[in-house]
Image: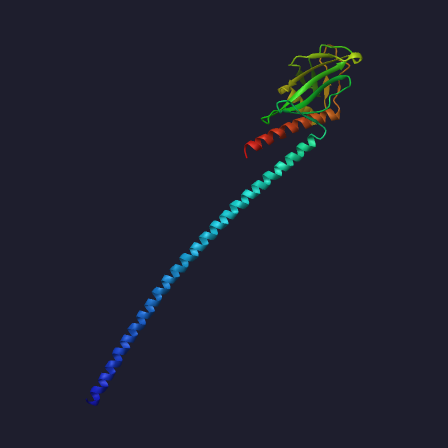
Length: 244
């Protein structure tokens, strides 16, 4: 083989080998890019899955925290309400009836005069209702039929005896005329007016007035306020229990 032919073959072999190498290199880099792209997609999908799981965990944690905050708030309200109830009943007498109802009441007045004595009866369903005992104690009966409550020059509430008035002899101490009834709207308005000012006047509504007319004592006015607040708390406690 001649020298020129030999050189031509060598060059041809090198050229072919070089072209094949270049093509292989291109194919390699293309394949590498495809593999990397697929790996990137897998990594992105995995990262998205991780983020989705973390988001769900965070959402679940946020809901749990919000629920705990609500429960803590409710617990705080309940504790505060129960503490208020304990304070209000500290000087009351609590007693149970045969059917399980509960009385919340103050001691009966023993002195002569006219009185409006509020108390609460809570039945077995949890409903608390204000009642009042209207009372007159004196040497003789006056035909008692209720009292007036005055809280201002032109503000008078007529608390009438809507239940039967009972006259009870007290021996040498005279008689007691009294009735026990559910507090009607006028009575509750009178109590709220007294509670708002912590003062008022109780009047025996008879012709020419009565020596029994007097200013309510501060303790009487405070008892009106306490009974009103206690009734609201007892009923709110029932409402809360029914909605938990």
